Length: 174
Image (cartoon, rainbow, N blue to C red; front, side, top):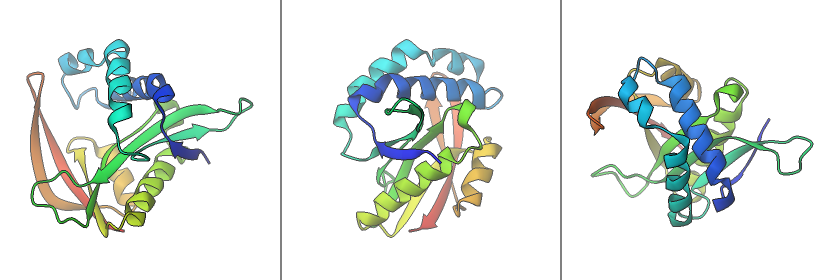
């Protein structure tokens, strides 16, 4: 099983690589090719280098596959914190994003990250948590249901680079 730790600015390159490569593996047929083409490593690295210092401590966690190198290889990440949803109770946390590199899919990395995030949120006093997943992403929805999350009936639309992406809301008690 992977180890989970807080992300550091030094992880920006790995986070960008995982983010971009996961989009390119998971989203063909779900998001337009034109949108996938905008996901490049160069732009993602800069975004992560800028964003990491601004994130609350421990609200961005990485999974690390321990190997011969004591540092290990970063295989995935999760971001979480207080819910960003309008009207959400102060006791509601949110999993903002969860990405595992395709080479590590089905290896327990996603579950380890999700468990760490929900444990962190519960430890901060949140009593329930929500997340948003692309409505057309059946693989991710099956994963969340296996991990005890349930669709809550909410949907929202994102407009991104000319594409409309529909997301479905999920919820679970902590």
